Every structure is written in C-alpha cells, then in structure tokens.
Length: 440
Image 1 (tube, helix red, strand yellow):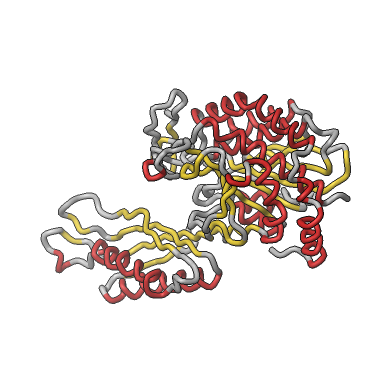
Image 2 (image 1 turned 90 degrees about the horizontal axis):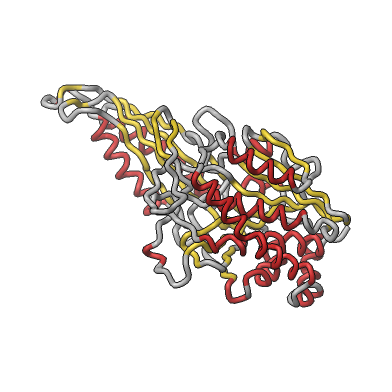
C-alpha cells in the first residue's frame, strides 16, 4: 500500500526537520527504558507461563483470558472473542493524535518440545483428528508477553500519549483449522481496523537466528506470500506382488513431487525474486504388500509477486494432472487448501521515517537491513489496509553460532529470556515517535 502524495511529502519533511532532533534521547524515551527495565521480569514470567501452556489456533482461550485480565487491570477498554479468541484493547491518550495499532499473535504449533527447560511444554491436544504435542515453536508466546508489557508502559504514560493505541492480540496466525476462518483476515472482517479507524500498524517477530539486542528490517516485501495445496492422486489398488494389475498412486506421487521441483529451477526468474515449492507431507498405504488406492500430499508455495504466484499455481495443477493422466491415474489439486497469505509489505516511506526510532531503541549498529525471507506472516493482511511496519527482534544468545540454533517450527526452537525488553522499548518508542510526527 502506498501513502498519499501529501503523506510522502510529510514524511520527507519529517526526516529533514524532526528526526535529527529526535536522535537525542527525549524525556519519554528515557521514561520508556526505565519502565521496560522495571517490568522485564514480569514480561519474562508471562512468556514462561504462555510457553508452558501453549494453545493451537482458534483455541487460545486461556491465553486470551490472561491477556484480557491484564489489559483490564490497566484501565484499558477490552473486547474479547474477536475472531474466536482474539483480544483487542483500546488505550486513549490524553492528547489528540493518530490511531496506532500494535499486533501480537498468540497461537502455538503441533510440535513436541525437546528443550530441557523448567517451563517446557508438556501439553497434548487433538489436531486434525490425531493426538499431538503442542509447543510455542515460533515465538508467539514472546510476542504476546511483549505486547502486554508495552500496554503496561503506555498505560502508565497516558497523560503524555498522543492519540489512541489499539492492542491487537490475534489468534491463529499459523492458520485456522480446516473448515474454520481465523487469523488476521477474520479480525479484519469483524472490524478490528475500525471504531476507531486505524491509521498505521506496527508489529514484530522474534528471530531465533538473530542475536539478542538486535533488530532487523526490510522495506517493501519482507516476508513471502504463501499458498498451500493438497494433491490427491487416485489410482487402482492391487496386491503388492502384482503391480501390473494396479495403477500405482505412490509411483505417480513420486513423479509429481520430483517434477514440482523443476518449477522454481526452470520457470521462475530467480535473479528477480526467490520462490519455493515444498511438499511437506505424503500419506498413502499401510502395508508393504498392498498398493493403495490413493495418495495424499500437502505442501505450500512461497512467492514475492502476484505474477510468480499465478505461474506456480498453474504449473502445479498442470504437472499433477498431466503426470497422473499419463500413468492412467487422476490427480485432484486443491489450492489454496487451508492457507493463503499475501506478501508482508513494509510501507517504504513509513519504514524510512521510523528507522531513527528503531536506531534510538537498539543503537544504530544494532539495527540491520536484511534480505527478504521466504517465511510468511498474516500481518500482511493488516498491512494491506493501512501503512505497516513489521520488524524482527533478536532472540539468540550473543556469540552463539547461528548454525547450531534450533530453527523456527522445530522441537529445538528456543528464545532467550533477555530478548523481550528491547521489544517493549522498540514498540513503545514507535508509538510515541509516530504520534509526535503526526500531531493532529
């Protein structure tokens, strides 16, 4: 989304006139640091609690209750049960100004934790009809705790606050269960960006492969768009000893998987943008001597342009259907299957304007311009509605070999306790600095 021409000029003037002055620590910035220091152990305790009690998407009832109770204790107006389990808090400053939204996601993943932590998750629940372990394997527990801390800091500074802050605690960022709506798209559908109408939105994501006390950012496309798929290959079953009587869907599925990998290597102009096609699961058959009737595969694609997305979608359907047809089988392609997120786009002018705020929070040397990532984020839906800025927050110990760190969405994923304070400071500064820029 592009800002209006008048806004572009405004941000240009701000960079020339305002931010050189803002580089000197302001009174409110010093107050934010002091308050973040004072509540740091509380934020860590919240995060430990959420980590030990993770909940899957659209099922974050306990988490939402903890969040709502805390916001209400601060005198913030609270609305619950938004998009199933979402919580929205509204804090009105004593001075006029813009409406600034801050977003944190609350959901965990169906992953079994292997970390030896005193607050490690032991939770199990049902997912897709099967019992599964549950773990905060992407840092959403930290996001929630950080935004609770920001709410406490800003509520204590209500007299100095310009405008209104809307705290959005979102369910189901990882995707709603099959057959359900959820996440940012449903929150928007239910009016979260209205009443009062949001002018700008900020968010952050913990990164296990970035050192503590560092922030990273990228203007324009920062996270890829994602679309998942399901391919069902239908063949003809037979005894394993008589494959000539079958149309073997396992062999066909293998051929499809291999051919799908040629889409990125042969159809996408990789010098312009990255792209990914992944098959993450294949299910078919239950015995060594039985050729099954069908095979199911699920996977996803990652792209940075609408054109690349359209090309890949068409090629997946063509490859699956024609490969199956050539073998005497059929392939049914469902795309999107459960999830479809657009590219997470950081408004270029907003990013440039707020960079000094990030540098003030972490130190110039600790704010890194990084390449785009093929991970995906449904913050993208919010950033389609208003100018948005989504940054990454370091979560691994200083000096640790990044290659040895557990990646996101894995049982080894871990975030250090001293990661969160900078998140509280950065989001709080973004609120005050943006409001100061846009006095009404």
